[in-house]
Image 1 (cartoon, rainbow, N blue to C red):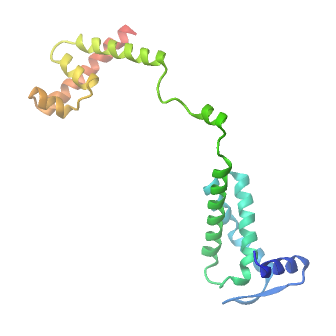
Image 2: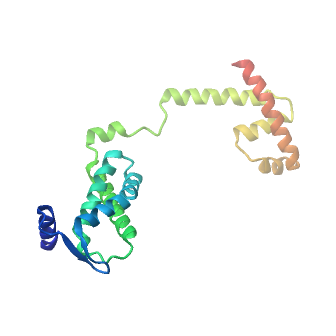
Length: 194
């Protein structure tokens, strides 16, 4: 913040500066012009700040910071496209906030290890999944031919219908029908065992 900005803010707050000359607009009542800008663009600025932060209170603070910056820079404003100028200030305030929030949230060693979730399943979960896969494989093999091989290839080996059709030398439509029927049979069998 330059000396000129400090002088304008101090004098305006003390009531000594009643008007300024905005380039392209001319001499205007400073306080009245700022109040008009707040009335006209307050909701827009707040919505920009809220979209960036997703926090009601931070958005309010950033809205106030935005208009404080507008207040400080009004004498240098060229008077062209107020909306874009104020929106740019609000966006920059929001982005600065995100940068600062990211720096403040550096985890300590203790919290870092508490937050990290293990990507590997525990041994119990792994054993359970393996057991379920074995049961499902056995269930697929228990189907009558040709559905047994189709079910194993499609559900256990995770082959596509096209790959199975090419492997078996059958038409894709035939394999699709067999997969559909195998799925229906497996649902019935799985329901009986459960």
